[in-house]
Amino acid sequence: RLVESGGGSVQAGGSLTLSCLATDIPYREYSLSMLWFRQAPGKEREVVAALNSDGTTQYVDSVKDRFTVSKDKSTDTLYLRMNNLRPEDSAMYYCAAVHSHSVNLGAIRALGAPNFGMDYWGEGTEVTISS
Image (cartoon, rainbow, N blue to C red; front, top):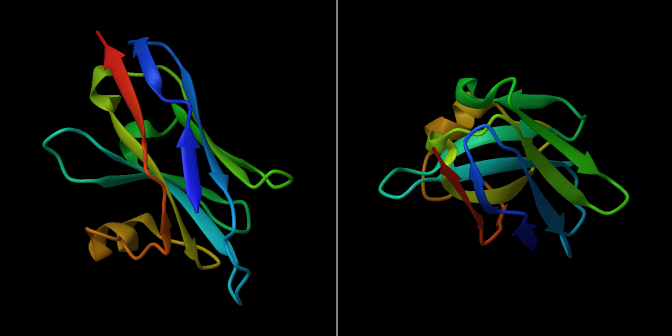
């Protein structure tokens, strides 16, 4: 399972770091790629960033140069460092994982809701950015 934490309320321009602890995920033939999604009220869930099993990262254009995804392998914890936050970043943020060596954000978007092809989902952590 995946458990997110670190959400909260900050002013625009501020920073937050989200965490996602992965526990009891079984080893399989393929490595694990991990992702962050978000869903704002009244909007569809969207993929934000991905960390492939080989350490490469991908970001959607709206968060490039502001968000950084990383992982502490020793603790199986995924992070999303969010800088220069904007009101439009306000959303419920979800951690997800898929047994795949790597993912492509365009392919993830094409798979679409509700599952986007993910094997595991967290319950989410809320982020609110005030102007």
